[in-house]
Image (cartoon, rainbow, N blue to C red; front, top):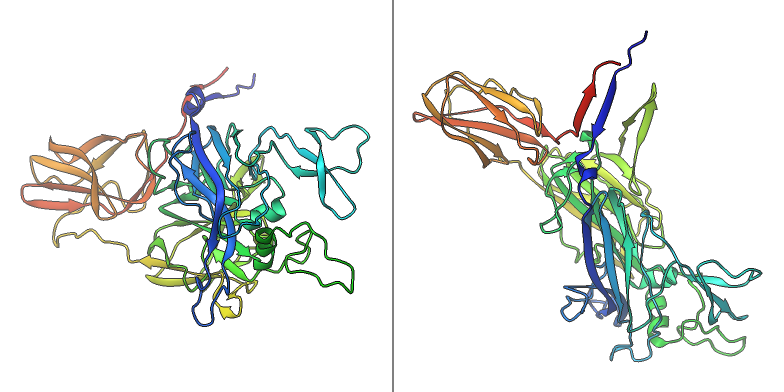
Amino acid sequence: MIRIPLIFVLLGASSARAATWSYFLRAGTTQISAGAYAALPLVPSENVLMWGYAKCTDATFASCGAVTFPGPPLMASEGDTLSITIQNALTAPVAFPAMISEPTSLVVLGQLAAMTPVWVSVNATGSVTGVTSTGARAAGDTTSRVRSFTTETPVGGTTVYTWASLKPGSYLYESGTHPAVQVQMGLYGGLTVYPAATPASPTGPAPTSGQAYNDVSTAFDYEVSLLFSEVDPELHYAIASGRYGTPPPAPPATTLRGQRTSTVNYAPRFFLVNGSPNPILPPVTAGKVGKKTLIRFLNAGLREKTPTLLGSYLNLVAEDGNPYTFVKVGVTSFAARHQYSLLLPAGKTSDAIWTPSAAGSVALFDRSLNLSNGSQPGGQLVYLTVVAAPTMPRPPGHRAVTVPSVGSIWTAGALRTITWPSFAPRVKIELVHDGKPVRTLARAARTNGHFLWSIPRTLPAALDYVIRISGGGKVIFSENFSIAPAVPAVFAVPFL
């Protein structure tokens, strides 16, 4: 008889009730002021109407921040529910009294949700004449077009959009209504969903380290998000002037500026990263030498990008929230791609891990050469600032901790024994990270050179922990070691 081992994996996260992450966003108007990108010559040469999102405190929308593009960064955790309430405040501002107002909606590219498309009829010139149906297109209707991918929020109204059972990764949230126009106008933002291995807290700040996905190979010490977008000022003028949707007249009549019915002649002139172009784009702090930095790339523009890291390489781990994997002998494993640039088409996201080898500024730019602001140099060029990693001073001549040894990987939730040549009857034992004590393991332990440590399951995963032991006027240290995330609880039946 063949004996087959069985293992039952009990995922702690699945037994707990999923949390709901609630956000309240107001879709509103703002502008890029004339001269914001350069004073001589004036760039832009006139105020440019922009749309964007403002983060509000609750469903009353009585207290909201400023409208920004991109919208505020959002986060959630794997398996949880995301709820975003949208208020449509896309009404004509004083500066642009003729602005076109229209309904809006919200989608998260790559996350599943029930969708209710809105179908509209159009005339010979492409202008909308009315809503024909919602949900499925009416039987026999072969001419209606989709205006919105899901339920619309009318001007002045509010709608709650919900996504359940979130999967981890980097995602774009954006308007699902007339997206060729509304996303270009500024209705977009970034969403980070942290994996169950290192989840975020609905009541706390974003994790400063952890894993991008549920595999220790995606562990990181720092993270940055780079959201690429662009602005076609002529399209924005068409919306601001109220002439968008008006077809140009037949020759020899003169076409007025702003008369257009689509984005076919899309011609962006300003190229942004996180809402600003170089040279006004500030440097981005991107971690420390020898540490792993997770870079989340997102493209909310209508043109593809080719982010390129000058003089260094990236390990690409995922795109659109889907990790790169390979299968060998029936086992699926993560498989990063080692390259210095990546293709980032419109609407796409990619995650990469970078380990800088030297302190200083490293240029990351769009190799598609979107490196201008109108007639001026700039555009999608950002400098990543890397600082030297702090070192823990180790007094000369002091004996070192024996275990953990250099390069050891211990697991949160496990029992491990710390050992060292005994030098004092009572010692203080501390866990150190980035040169600073982060946890006291024992304050005055009676030991003879060993200490049994129950590693907390909630201890953040990281690659550069150090044990510090002091007593009797002496201090000793371990070499750097790693803590891996806690593994799921396992109940094993050895044989049947």
